[in-house]
Length: 167
Image (cartoon, rainbow, N blue to C red):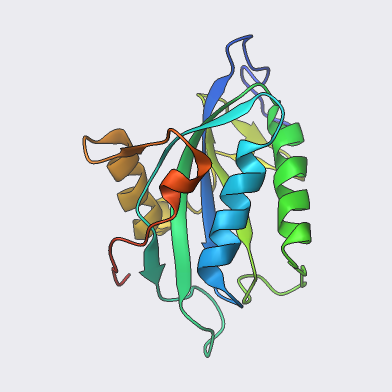
């Protein structure tokens, strides 16, 4: 079942927020690769990025710490097309999907918000249903929406780890 509102981007694109996370392998490299891949998507430009934050994992015990970052992008891709592109970026980064939720991963790319669109279907829920439960996402969104945001001029501008937080 689909509950959609305003699911088509305008000719100028839609501002979407994408959460990146990685806790396997070279985590910083995985985030950099994701930013590069997202910035190269058709009709998509990174507008801003939060600081990279190290957080405790959600889910099964014994996992390594995560690096997380939030991106604000403008995109002309429709929500499901953006999802498909993000899944391909994850796959290229070595992401293997498991039946168990919240397992360790080389890369996770989640659409947290897509303009004011609301979607609830078998493939995609926007706003992301875990947003209220993830303090680090809320901090990262606030950072992007606040005055301390790093505005992106080039894809490498987001390559910094500037703070460490615990959840």
